[in-house]
Length: 156
Image (cartoon, rainbow, N blue to C red; front, side, top):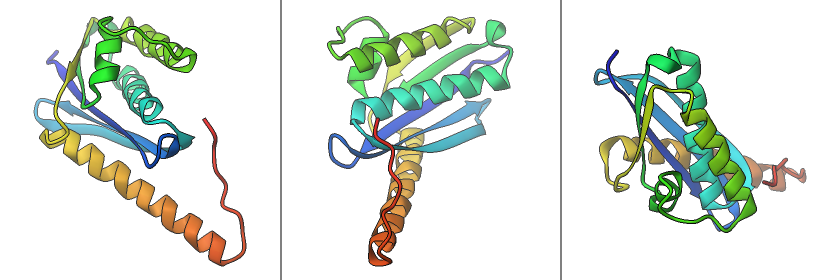
């Protein structure tokens, strides 16, 4: 089986603030799957980790994990260096997310975590998608306030 390439991104408007995570899964140059998720109020690092976790979960459901090689690319140097064991993790919440992502990674034949610039083609695509999602959520919250209703929000 060919190597599967995964591109992830997370964003928070404020830190913490409204946040979203997303990914694109590529196989042999074709987009196989993608996902964007609203996280509620969370930090940027949470959003970045959540993107990696959701992407790994999607790959596990799409492929025979034990026979699949993954290259997971993120623009978050901190998250990638933490996943590669280069940076220590002080936050308990991020330690939990790191353990979850690392455990998911062990299900695959191999996983390589790489860092790329935000200007990378596929990272830019994910960034655009999650920022579009955050724009929609912001518009809905604005409309709810105008209508006199309180918009639901998740605190993470």
